[in-house]
Image (cartoon, rainbow, N blue to C red; front, side):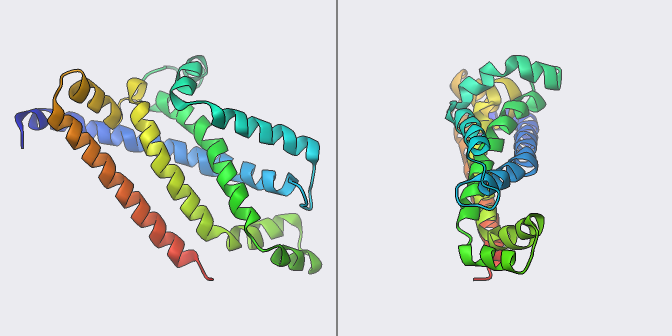
Length: 219
């Protein structure tokens, strides 16, 4: 182990914790807010039982607008809002604010797409048996799409792991470590180590996501 790596080991553990904190907050916001938003998009969409073209158009436009922002621009543009919410514009919690706002519409779109893959006949059968919209969402749509939703969340987690590295410019974490030591101080071994850690995290997330989705898939 090189002297450079030994010297940064205490910071490395802190940076790893900061990265996981940012990722955890972002994914929690995506599931708690983006999930219901995706269900709403599906229900209000064309051909659905609660079809509302005008409302669907507004929400669809908002989702597409937020998703169109490059993350680094969104990070900078939201500094005043981040300071209002987190009380500061630096640190992992502050970086989690733009991460969360980017994750919500991203996951909402994934949820909507997965619900559209649920066979139409299954939904119509539930309607014919007198199920309410809430029952159809909870017992039909989410159950039938659960494997795809897990895979969608896995894709989101991996994508936002790379976003958290970008957020390192204000939030710390692995990305900050790579920039400060690997880039500014030309410590190539530190840069290689941070990249290796990110690769391992991606592999673990993908492996876990695939395994959970396989267990939930009853087809």
